[in-house]
Image (cartoon, rainbow, N blue to C red; front, side):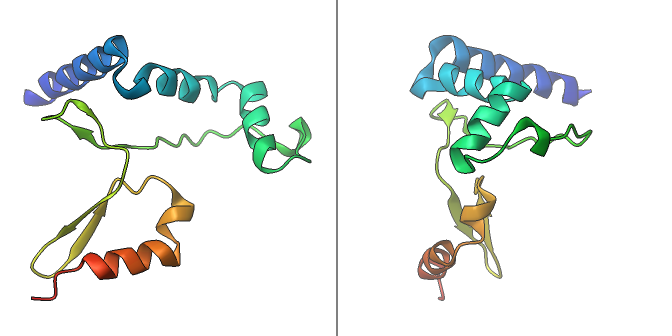
Length: 117
């Protein structure tokens, strides 16, 4: 069906993005992939909580994939969130940080962008 073609198309786009290294995509991809290694994950976590040790971290079968929008027209990752207003709803896209999505600052910004007409 069409799904394998879409998957191949998406893999091709990301490979092209990686090879061309648009907007530092290669560095970003490498950094994210390396965080799967426990020592590097711990090092990154210690930047937030310096007192962490390897005893504080345990393996999990749960896998979190942080999705991010890709602009087909500009052929690059979208690095900011988007607010799309519908007739009865507002959709916040690409809000990739849980801390950011729960912030009052973002709520204020979304309210300011809503079209009340």
